[in-house]
Image (cartoon, rainbow, N blue to C red; front, side):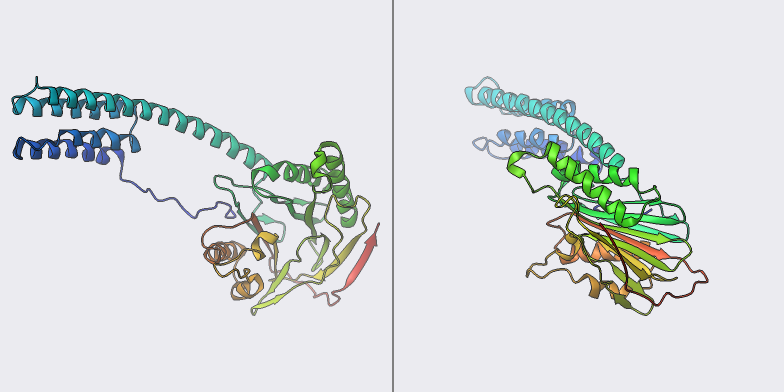
Length: 381
């Protein structure tokens, strides 16, 4: 399965709860023992509040109440030991500690309730995101595919970038796009574009006509739902790719989207020369150009969004995608995605300023004849 998670793995940052339970108990015992041994004019009993105050960080309100009761009992024991349980000083200490324990238990209860609500919201959000962005298949016909998605917003798995694939009459069609904006606010436009692609891509229509259909869908959406203050600001860049099963070529139509990289064995990286039309939603009747390029066995086509090449390091330098992938031209698509994920996040200091998506498509070895023409173009209005 293609790597789509923002983190390679999750390490447990704290020991298990039973082990952590020893910490507040040990603090209560330690403070009590020390208080009993120091001179009577030194009062360490108020420090017992530290134990119940720490407990909500790893346990619920019931455990917090238990630790709090143990702390109050220790305070009472200290008072009896010093023979002054009825003195004003010890009474005030016991009452104060009891009030602080009650407040800590209330805080723990509210915190637990909020965590449960947040967990439910995250579950619903993740389910919605998975429904919107279907995982790409690892293999379609003679093509091996891997993908990577890095969302800029915390707790989000998708944002304004999108991709999809679908088989279509002896070929595979791929969409990668980037709607204006980033994170969760851009999901609505991404859902519209993905839905329109999935509805129309399987039809036997030229790729440039498919781009026109998507353009009209985005334009209609903007006209019906775009707020007046955002007039003309709803658009999306997109790259449509069609890869035939039998012919060693790839057909592309770019709507304001960055060109892909073609990775060939021997650390060769080339950039196909595309003739992009305006982004989707800018001009409903824009002319779309179909560019055709060679795509042979062993080649890997790397599609990406601008969040990849616009990622900056601490010195403000953009990520040099073409230079970096030249190291990994002979790696599998899955390995390539793992390399890029690690390298891109390291370049950006662990956090991206914009959503980023990549797709690697490799044609598996077959007996094919190389297509030498690399500049075939067809115009569609």
